[in-house]
Length: 132
Image 1 (cartoon, rainbow, N blue to C red):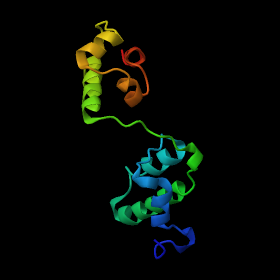
Image 2: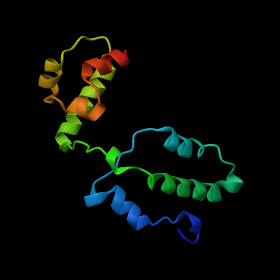
Image 3: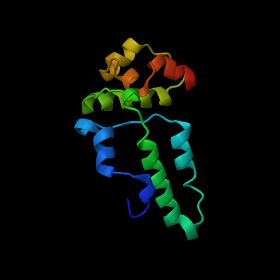
Image 4: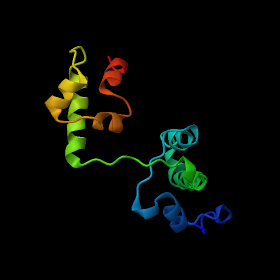
């Protein structure tokens, strides 16, 4: 990294250790800084694509170096079966937008309780209201 852009002082190992301590994953919610970096990748002239992507990667590393640990949040983790059941509930709600269904019915039918809310950040009821 120093050869490409020595002024940036980007240490990938330190960045990894800072952002992904203890081998945990980091998820950054959408924000204008990240949107800006990625939105410009789609319409780049082929003649400058490789150097342009290099610049955008450096920009991303610079941004990641500014992320504050206090903004980190612990993400819940679920077993593969809970995630699968939650995806089934999601698909069912998409395929049946008009059918009235309670959380209790969904829980019984798909053997899942609070996982939907944890995965999709909203209850099935709220999800259905926004996607009908």
